[in-house]
Amino acid sequence: MFKFKSKLKLAVQDRIKAMSVFELWTISAFKMKLNQKIIAERQKNGFTQQELADLIKVNTRTIQRIESGESLPRKFTLKAIAAAFHISLEELTAEQEVPEKVISINYAPAVYDKEDTAHFLNLFCISCFSYLLLPYIHFLIPNYLLKRRKEQNPKVLRFANKVIRTQVYWVIATVLVFLCVLFLNFILRFYFKGYYINYLFPFFIMYLLNTLLIVVSLRKVRTLDFQ
Image 1: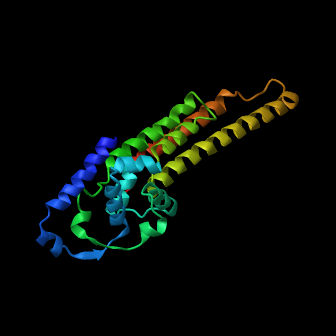
Image 2 (image 1 turned 60 degrees about the horizontal axis):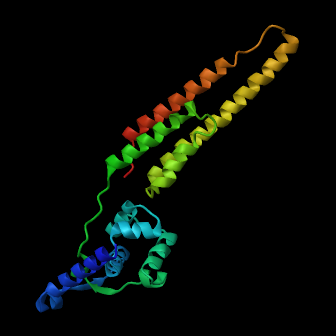
Image 3 (image 1 turned 90 degrees about the vertical axis):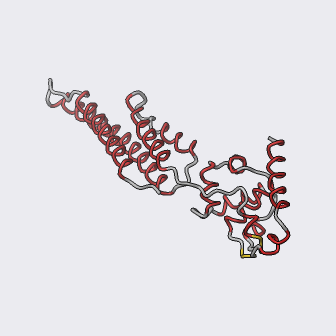
């Protein structure tokens, strides 16, 4: 890891040294934007996007979006980035005059990976079928998958959280339905001897309902634009 960082630093330094005096004098100065400042500081510290992401505990795609200007980082993310660069938040967000050509070194704009997001959301929805084996606590599995991914896209987060809430509501509804059936059977036992409601009936109804809810979520993944 240390050797890799050293090589990265040397590559940047060699690229700058390779510029002619004329190039250095003709590079126009401009007000550095926040995403460009983050790129410059990352390169200055010899971090790759993956290494910076690991340091501040986010995924690489988040760093790519920040550096490309595709998304604006939140305050706590900015604080974590500043801490990784060993500078203050004020220094990181302050505008500076810097050469444009230096900023462009080793930088490639992030590309939104729609297929990767769709694949994750399909897997996320399918994980809800775990209710067949782990009823009442199955929603912990998709919740774990979402936390592990460290997703930053607000549209994806809204969709995923809605799916989890739906599963929690289903668990609550299922428990209430069984309690109601239990109460009705208790009454039927005393007032209508010989009559009772078979527990398999609400069982199949509620399980079929949840299957339909998950299938609807899977269909939404195909149609919604999460970009």
